[in-house]
Image (cartoon, rainbow, N blue to C red; front, side, top):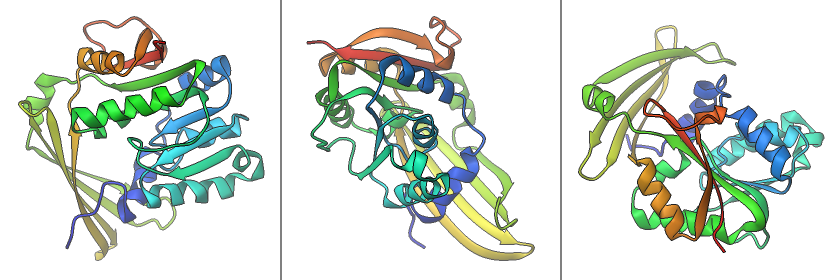
Length: 259
């Protein structure tokens, strides 16, 4: 059985099941959208976890994502949401390193570890360059990501974890077998995932994925932003806008064009 992308097929569907109750960052982005105004652009919008509530709040937003399956899920959810939200949204299938939208945006978001999918420095610089290219003169580019917990990574590297969830529509049992390993020389996290869906004792479907993500520290992301012609206007500890401290788990950079 060939491995799928983390954002194809069964995995695209599982993404929403896994993240259905996660909204820790939503209020922050709603507040930023109110502060800086439309239009908005989300890089790596996925199935619309942030995009749809922003559209439902009346904001004009464009979502860019490479995965056709994730965008299809997003469109399905928009269709359910109704015309009021749907008319505010433009979905674009494109690589966030290489896209041309022909317009500027007041708020551009690379939310919830999106930049970790840039596993080589040129990829990260390309994303930042595209953000700057599409940023309005008074607009902001917002990047948030997890600060690596090296101790926890070393302790958990190669350990297999298994957890189960119930499919919210079919009532079937989904078993997620997950294993992450960390290469600190390359600064790469390798994630192996095996999903299985069971109806009582019968296996309905199964899929595997193999994904690599970067391990980025705040200072190197800050340097990449500056190299790309962006200046950091504000740094927040996670989504509550507090100052960054040693125990911070997440970081938010609010950036403007340096020119």
